[in-house]
Image (cartoon, rainbow, N blue to C red; front, side):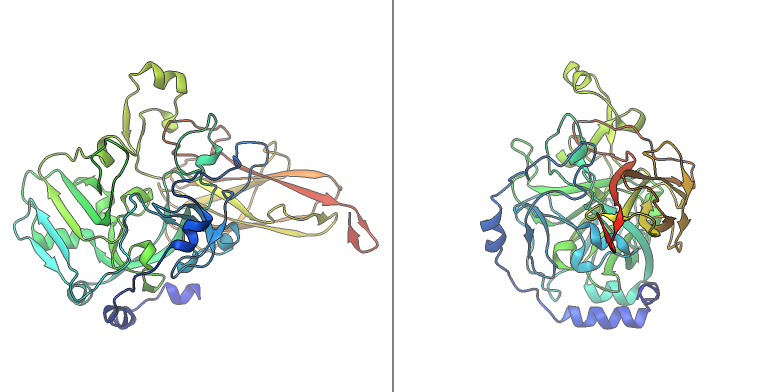
Length: 434
């Protein structure tokens, strides 16, 4: 299955998109979720940062169109978290991929006969490209990349901060196929004096009170090397994107947090002056310090310089065993998990069986690209019945290693502290573990 995903041909892509192009996505009702979870309710109880916090957020499993049951955080805007079990493989299924929107009014219908991607602003030749023009006139490219919400693992922050109290499941990895962003910009002809590229999708509605943010806008510096790797994607794991994940187009910025991965991308604007809208000037910013770290006291005192959040720090996770059941003493267990980094490919993963006192190297899985999940595994045979604290840490090709210290900032961003999992090993008696 994974090998098939890695080889999406142009013919296959056009066949899939031709089928999608004949559809209008029907309007759906979201009343079932609304009855389970009031608008903007934060999930209780608190999931962290105790000695063994819940891996996922604590919330109801809810159903949405084109989605498997996922963990619901809020209804408007929609926030759905992917359960831990889906991360056993390198690719996250489309129907299990997490969902995070910023504004309450999201598109539930796109007619491809009427829709077009507009490239405008400080360009020589403004363009409006139809769906078929994007797929037929531009060479398709594919990249495997992790999409991670900036607030993933926010529930671990102490003191607690505002925002969706995500566990670890606000992330996913997919093979994205589309058109290189630079190729689209070249087709429009960027004028001299341009400084940024702004992106806008189809979500609207009132944002934070007083912010004037009724549309979601994000920009990247025109000189940013990330634009060279960015893809305007129309396929996700070889299929049209689910509506909740950005159909018909999504901007993919490998290595960067998902705030830049604009869903339902419809406008690309080249700017001659810096973008100072709310989502750039105020939101998604972190202290300009090591790891984006500060304290509540420093924030209250004022004067903390901030910068826009961008690349994802190195992270790793133990996926199985998950601690939900005892393991018999003397049984050989395969520890499995994933690792990734926004700065380059994972080159080493280490596991600890004694709460980070000693480490040994795990075996890495197949390399699917610098910005993909990298699976890993290690053998473990616990001989003594007791509680063990397993831990995992990753190192990327730039030499960045996960720390064992927490981070704090008011946005709840950049968490990458070493994850630990308590595993109980029981005695074997009469064929059972107790």
